[in-house]
Length: 210
Image (cartoon, rainbow, N blue to C red; front, side, top):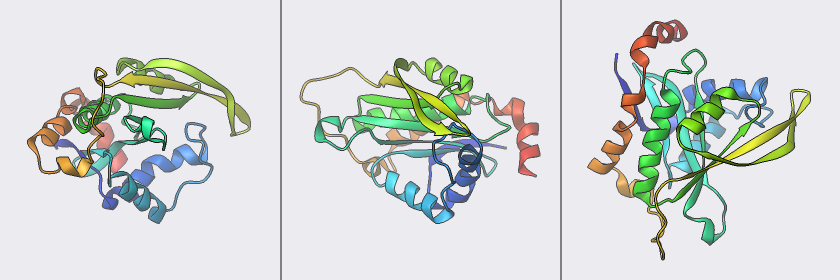
């Protein structure tokens, strides 16, 4: 069985929804109350990949996790910053998938010309907190009791990561599609693969494929 990290397509929406939906139903990890429909998820993927990366980690045809970037804010001065999110399938967490996906994502964002990445995590979430710390994110603040879900108020911690040194008069970021079919993109996608520990977890993956 082989593992790859690649750019998502709308055809991945069903498996992505399988991963994401449980976080909507009975978890404060996502502040969405109801999972999106399949059509809505397809539209989300299509919208992101018009400009930014949405990546999936696939193992033997099974999507095990995904990560994507979105604009941090709409105003022009924010154009070099993105928000990032990562979700991993139940049963294969702590297999290096999050680190692998983030590694590939950040390489691509640098190629595009982005300088800052921001991520939020509902507290407590030990797995997410450890992942962001390992990836070099720095905590920059907490929104206290900002969301109500599952019968309780929840804090959200925000992290910041500098993707590359700042320069004066930076060029506007380029579109992800400008990088399609380039060796630079292929290298960036492959850069996360060494962090996967799927050989250890293949039995668990097969069990969840049933």
